[in-house]
Image 1 (cartoon, rainbow, N blue to C red):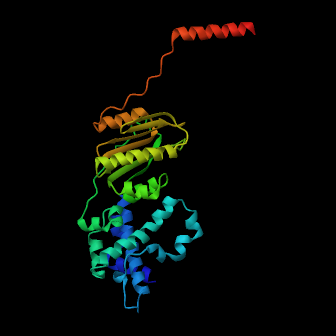
Image 2 (image 1 turned 120 degrees about the horizontal axis):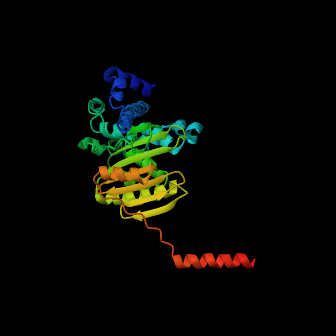
Image 3 (image 1 turned 90 degrees about the horizontal axis):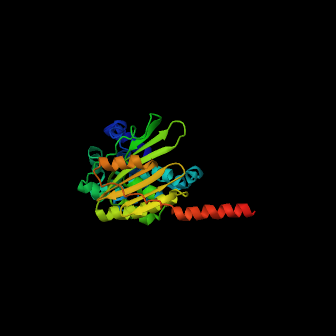
Length: 315
């Protein structure tokens, strides 16, 4: 009840539905605001549980908020959910509580109004409260529309959004170790992605652009994400690996990854022509040339054909 009544009071004072919808076009910013709502309600619940002890949340040292989730975190339905879904559902409660605790620890509940007046801009600020206090602003990143380059109008755009540090951490965790995923995602500065679906075949096209904090961070991302792509697609052919460029074919289409400076782009489910056009639009250098297939030696071909003919005649 303490948790739910906190939501009611926040709605009364801050009109939380309109406050949440203000960033509805940015999934990362929306999740950050969800973390303020659920995290503050969790903090109120902790304070209520501590009533009569002479202590409050701001007196507690850092602790694992998962302890507060009880049966919810281990419910059969939640346990059956894909890790990405499960972690996204839990993020506002767990990371939100840590964020709220760091905000009110030295100031008290009076700091809550500041969170609604100046809400966090990204899940990165939730994961790293010091970045919220410093006022770090995510970099604006764009991905072009691919409707024309993908051919006839038989595709529908499913998603056009931002993943944020939390989203990239979750993507990487599916293919590499959790610590490595967190370390790479911490270098996040901004991103955007677009997903298309073919109306008939339901095959997907995914284009992403990720901006990182340094050239070194981009190089680390390139190495680990190329590894992740190989794990994601078991059937691969014509693999091409060059400095800052990686591609291969799948039975359905092709996969591309390229990094230049602090930016990395990926394209899954389209062909080389589409990716080359994107590179050109970014004014990046041309793509590395594909290896040339060795030409057949006419003399050797003739000898092989003659040998086969002789063998067939003798049989």
